[in-house]
Structure formats: C-alpha cells, structure tokens
Length: 458
Image (tube, rainbow, N blue to C red; front, side, top):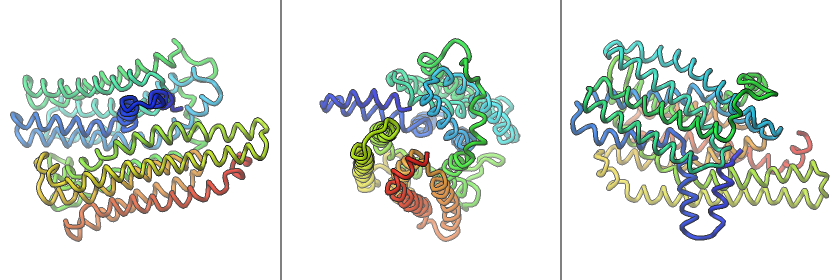
C-alpha cells in the first residue's frame, strides 16, 4: 500500500545529497503520524501562550489536548490494523474504488464512538464551561478521524499534498488556538484548536478523494464492507489495542497514581515531572521512523511481494530461493540502517540532554528522565519496525503476544517505579519496549527460517 514510499524512493535514487535529505524529510513527516506532530504543536503553543495565559488555564488546555490524543489512539487502535488489512486486500484484488467509501464508513463509525467516549470523559468536567466541554469532544472526534484517514495516506502517491496538508492543518490549529485565547478568552482556545484539526481533516480527505474518490460507492463494496474483517481478524484488533494502550500505559499510571501528579480539574490529571520528558524523548523517533518507512514499508514490501509472485508464477526452485534471500537481505539491511540511524540520534540527544533540558526549561530530574526514556524511544522504534515485519509474515499470534507483553509490562513497571522512587522513572518504559523487541525478534527469526513453508501454506 505504500504508494507514497515508492514515490519517495524515486527521489532518493537520483543519488544527490539534496534528494536523499528531501526524501527522508518527507518520509519522517508522513511516517511519524499526527500524534508526533501534535507534540511539536503543543510544545510550540505552550511556549507562546504562557506569556499571557494564566498557568492554570494553560495546564487545562494542555492536559485536555493530551487526553484527547491518548483516548483517540486507544479508541482507534482496534480498527487500524483491521482497516489496513482490508485496504491491502482491496489493492490486491485491484478494487481501488472501494478504498474511499470504506474510509468514509470507518470515519463515521469512529466519529460516533468518539462522541460517546469523549462525551463520557469531557462532559463530566463540570468545573469547565459547556462550550469548553463540547469543544473538547469535537477535538477528540477530529483527532480520531485523522488517525483513521492516516491509515490510508501511505497508499497515495501525491506525497507533497499530504505533507503540505499536515503542515497547513497544524499551523492553522496553532494560529486559531492563539487567536482564540488572545481575543476571546481562555475557554475558547480549545475550540480554535479543534477548528484547525477539522480543517486538517478536510484537507486529508481531499487528498484521499482526489486519488481514490469515484463520485459514488464502489460497485463491489459499500462503506461498511470492512465490518466483516473485525470478525475475520480478531487478533489484529487486539494487536492494535494493546500496542496503542502500551504507548500510553506508563503515562496513565503517572496520571492516576504518582504522588507528584497534579489535578487539573475533576478527573483530568497531569504529571509534569514525567510528561514533558517522555514527550520530548518520543520526538527522537522521527529519524528512525523515516528509515522504517522508506526501507521496510516500501523496499521490503516490494521484494516480499516479488517472492510470492515467484511462487504463484511457477518459478524455479533457484528463483524462489533467490527471491527469499533478497527478502531476508532487504529486511536485515533495513533493520541495520534503522538501528544505526536511531542509535546515533539517541546517543547524540543523551549527550546533549542537559542543554536541551535547559532550552525547554525543565529541571535536573526531568532531564534525567529524558535521558532514560530516550533509550526507551530507541527500543520502541525497533519494536515497531520488527512488529510491522511480523505482520507481513502473518504471525498474528506473535504480534499479539509481543503487543500484550509491551502494554502490561509498561503499565505494571510504570506503577512499580512510581512506588519505588523517582530515580527509577522511565525505566519501566525501557524494559517494556526491550521485552517487546526480544519477543518480536525471536518470532521474526522463526518466521524467516520457515518462509517457504509459510508461503506454500497460504
């Protein structure tokens, strides 16, 4: 499905430094996804807004946006992999006309679920105004739908429109939030932010419709054609749920149980000691994600498909073995390059953690947590990359085991480190990601060794 990836590879093949940098920059923006870009937007906004907004109002806005993204990711988690599998099957069947209707149907379902979940969470914050609560629910709906449509964006070839949509959309969110706070008051800021996200959603929909829109429903499937896939692939639902839950598990533990947590209002909490450090460390995954997208989601996928084509087209044993060797070598090279790029990034940031901490105005304790969680972010990129490869090899049980261990370990050790001492903050995330890497690497080695057997069983 990585149509964008193939286009970016064409750019990098020219061999010039400028083209290579440009292809990886585009890849980093696209592959990092909305939740990484949102961190940058929130960091930028808070640094500007703190000059004239009261601290309590700024904390309310920041915590509300963070919870919107956390709830949205967990909510759409069970859908993401199922929708990806559905879209991939439609591409294989050359039924591209069903992509846009299915996306629209999935967004409709997501919007309804977001209204229910967001309403249950935000509408009970009685200490805030009704406008603020409704705006928070609207933001969650927009964010959830953006996550859904992001599943389909890698199939597009017009990468410039996708990147510009994200840039313009998030810039609009920040500008509208700033103007709302400046001229209409603190209660309107989240409405401006939500309006910007709605604009971003419209831009992304336009990109998708331009390439896959048919002006009507597909002749062979409707907007709810994907629904049956939830019953066919329950393991994929759980994989998506556990992975996204695992991403937020440690943060939830700090919001709910840390003594240093701060009650913003009602059941809305924040953990400033941990939150800022972990969010900054997660930004470090962008270089690794760029390599992952270009090398694994495109080059590896291309050779993997060629391997199966050699079997289906009746290739000789020598041709099949050569195709298998190409798949293995491509996977190894991709993972090795990702490892080197992300290790360099992590080492560099660890070495300069103190100056970075001073730039963002965080204390020594947070700087220490930042250094620790940088290693967790490094392992997280490795985990996600190998987990994606495992999906290609159709090892859903292995992926589910790794994702479940990651989620439960991150939650359990996150809670344990809270009870021990702040010197241990962040180590739970590192160990959880490390265990995930160990499990998925073992399963991946096993699948690679049995690649021909697996291929003939499909």
